[in-house]
Amino acid sequence: MKADQSRKLDARVRSELVNVRLTPKELAGFDAVLTRHDITSRAEGLRRLIHASNDLFVPDDELANQMQGLSASLNRTGNNINQIAQRLNEAKRQGKTPPYGNSAHGQVRALAGLIFDIADQVQDMAQRRRSALSGEVARVLGGFADGPE
Image (tube, rainbow, N blue to C red):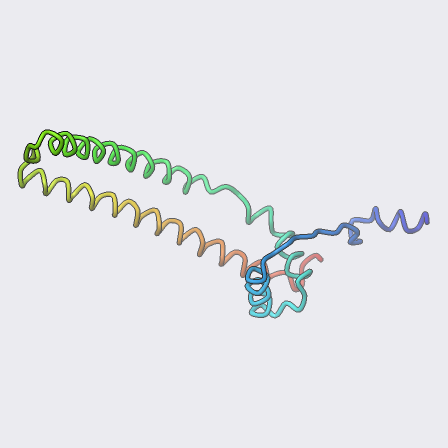
């Protein structure tokens, strides 16, 4: 028993168990990734990801700052659109024609275009982040063949 206890204290001996529940679709996706990287067991794939977790799960300060700036811009734009909608609703309730002309209509269209541009930028940033993480996961899954186990 004493030998077994000292073996468990040895950092190289695997004595801890990690359980996780997945949907069949999630498990199939994970198995597909393991197959692409010639990893023969789920345990080995999870072990590699756990070893690399310190580098993978780091907050991205640059992305957070960009998102805050975009969020502020989107909020300002949303406030402007709300004001336009309120004026249009007021005019409609009073039976009046819209309180703006053709040039203002172009400005409203430009404002809507800005919102779509911001949404596209957010989507592009998220895609770049996903791609970077995917690359890092691929590196981790492929890079531990000779590393610590």
